[in-house]
Amino acid sequence: MHEPSPNDCGCCADVHFGALLNQSARVIRRALDARISGVNPDLSGVGGMVLGDIVRANRNGRDVYQRDIEQWFNIRRSSVTALLQGMEQDGFITRCAVEKDARLKRLVATDKGRACHAEIEASIAQFESDLQKGIDPQQAAVARAVLEQTLRNAQHILEEGNTN
Image (cartoon, rainbow, N blue to C red; front, side, top):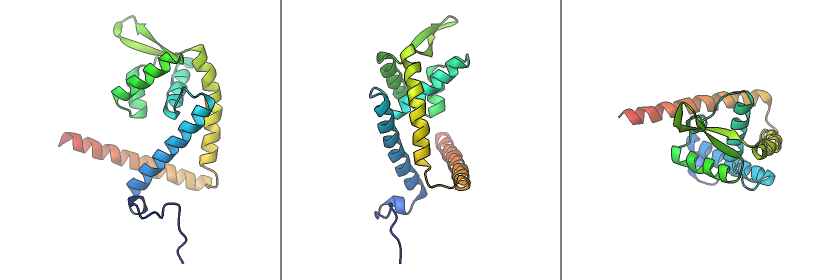
């Protein structure tokens, strides 16, 4: 007899790998948003991850710009603009003009941002642990390899679509 899985809903995620991956990503994002907003209600999960990347880059003496965030997270410019504006208004980051090009604004974490990042880092570490609960490390490594290849395939499909 067939044991029903959590995804036996008769929807396309039962049949299509991409749909299951998309559904998983949406649920993971909502769960991460909830976890991060538990640390600071002014930040989303993506905002917490962006703050973390800005803090780490600043700590390592690397400059970070909006275009870096767009590339790292594969997010559209308008979405990144709105995210960074909110983070700036809430006091997590500042944008500093660059001497060589006044149009460029370097992203710098504030004291508030750095303090919040420490809490978020611990929360994300626990989130990752909770997310992988019950998964054998070898299975996790295989899943990572499959997801990385799926991402490369999707990027290739997207690039093909942009050239047609």
